[in-house]
Length: 177
Image 1: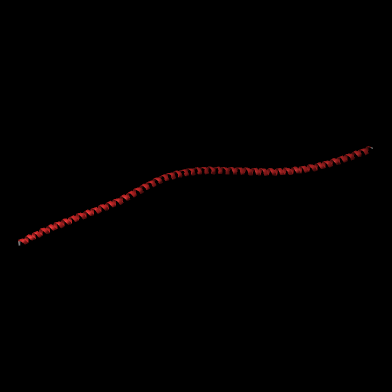
Image 2: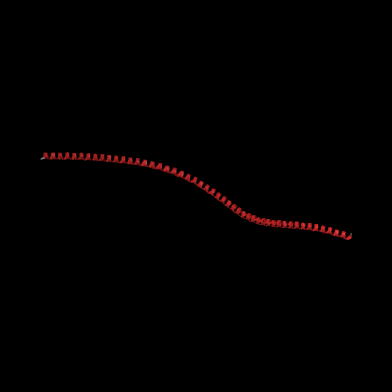
């Protein structure tokens, strides 16, 4: 029995030793597994960081591009604002010039109306003058005709007077003879 106890205790020791070895092996495998898991996590973290760095670089590049675009837009806005202000100034000048032209046109219209009134008055005066001239000419012609008729009558009367004077003189000659 003793032998058997010794064998049992040896078996127990060997089993215990084997258990410790197995436990140590399990612990070693666990440690390696943890190490592999950590390496894998570090690798994934490094890959994620690389991807994040790439995204960050892309985002920074995009931000730089957007800033450049924003600056270009600001410059373009300022240029367009200056152009718009210039166009507004030009429009104001055109409107002022149009107002001056409109005022000059209105003044010309008023002046034209006054001139047309003067022309109408002058035409009326000229028509009256022409009519008066025509009447005067007609009166002159009538008077000239009357004068001519009177001169004929005077000539005829003078001829008759001469004839009667000659007759009277003949009669006086006959009466004295």
